[in-house]
Length: 291
Image 1: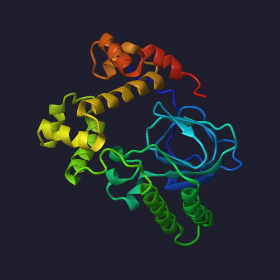
Image 2: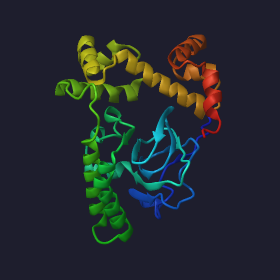
Image 3: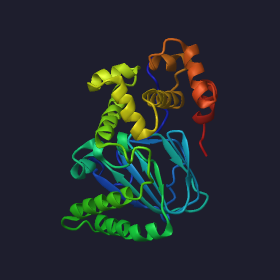
Image 4: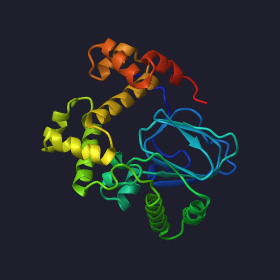
């Protein structure tokens, strides 16, 4: 049975004047009544939220993040999210197409923050950091609005500078001091998981596909992420289960079969063990209004 997707999915920026030629779009939050969007939805493009002032919650792929002054959020294509604010927000929304990113990052998996192997959902800036970076947003807005000769080049350069400076602010993570070869192998593994998580279920399957031993793969993943290969495979499977439960009209057994798990009872036990809720409880919790 085909799942019926209930979530709005924005394939091009709804704010741009020319959707057919969409590469980049910028929206100033101040004074807008159509943002934030408190209902679960997805984008087919990259989405950066630059929050100068707001107070609320941001649900991103079932992880609840605080929205507070000087927040920056990074949403990749296909991710589910919704956010709200108790006060009128100020800041910017930057919508970036895959083609726009390819112009500044020829390798898709090298994109900071948004790439599968580099995902980091939020940064919370200090007042000093926000003050230092805000001029870049103002310059992007000026160039985007003016649409003068070579404005696209100027916007692209400023976005690259913004992402580079934000990248320097990332907190230290388990893999920051890992050997470069470990980082490269882990990145290749994560990309492979995204492509084959419904087919490959064992460490051996991924190790064979990557032409390394199981031990080497486990060492690389643990040194760069602090987690085991098995843990990352379970996390990806759980994320897909959550998306299917909330985005479709599939029942529990049908979700189990879509995940290539033939025993719905096993799926229910697996899901509850890792989330603390049964699949049905989770579906009821997240299928309604979020905020």
